Image (cartoon, rainbow, N blue to C red; front, side, top):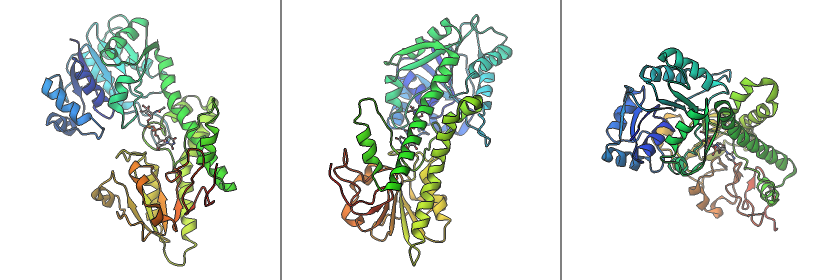
Length: 424
Ligand code: SAJ
């Protein structure tokens, strides 16, 4: 049995560690955060992700996983630390390089290092130099190095860790094959081998592609609102074409991946990334667009209207608030003295909402304007008769029911549709 050390027990590192540990590997989890380590070692899962607490209990019972702030020697080192960007949209690789220095101290002949963090093109080569300098060993001869980006979707991480195909970019063929040996212990998807630079580019392109698609959907929504047609119907009908596959508009793009990764390419290739930059700007602008929409409607009331914002998380059916456009919109509206804002999200408890300076209240009856920010499944059961005479702003299309326009938003007046009904 090979020993594995996972460096960074965050949203990717911890699930990877636990999945590997449940597949007969001996896994050590390393993190610089003592509090997190203590939490994990008492059996409490510090991350909200379906199935993860159960998996932690399983691997603890099997004794195949332990966590510490001291990195042990291991056959494989997997680096899964954050790569945030700084205010000027430049990537911050300091966590990766710090992790690299920690690994270098434990590196022995025959070991394999795998970088999973999303990184700018060329980062694995920089890590290679750093590992060589700090270990005195030679990459490709004494140790092996590969870049293998994570691709899992929050909310489905455990399933996708096993089923997704993986792209494995080795600094040489042996490195790629060594990395594949690790992933094949639990991945049932295909493992495609390539070089490190290609794998880095693939990861950034995947998320940029999604960002561009969402930007297109947001522009479709804008254009449709100008001519009073339903963007969700337009997208649904366009997607009937065998080679068209549009994504959905929303109140903006949140999370820590899609809204971040394209900037890595814009930073590296400023002359060759105009489309990516524009898409980022369109998606970043969407929450401001929604705020302005609400404020201009609020001004039409003689008194302060009651605005009920539904949903705060960065996407549906999770509790994750990181870079959430919905939360940004709620916070901006709460600053306005032209309206009275209350918010509701079934995934965010009242204490958290209050701590963010917002007021939790779920009263459809007293709301003048209902702002649907996140398409949580729980909201689909909202009683349409209660909201039919309200002003509804629904940028994510929760109330759009028709597969191709058989039923639209209900009778409320909507941002992107003000026709009462239409038939196919
Ligand atoms: N969104 C839309 N319209 C859509 C789809 C999403 O507005 O049609 C919004 C969501 O509401 C959310 C944001 O985009 O605010 C991002 O959500 P997401 O579900 O598209 O993606 P993430 O950030 O949760 O995860 C992505 C995934 N990448 C791709 O699907 C290409 C995931 O597979 C990656 O592992 C992850 O980024 C990552 O870590 O890079």
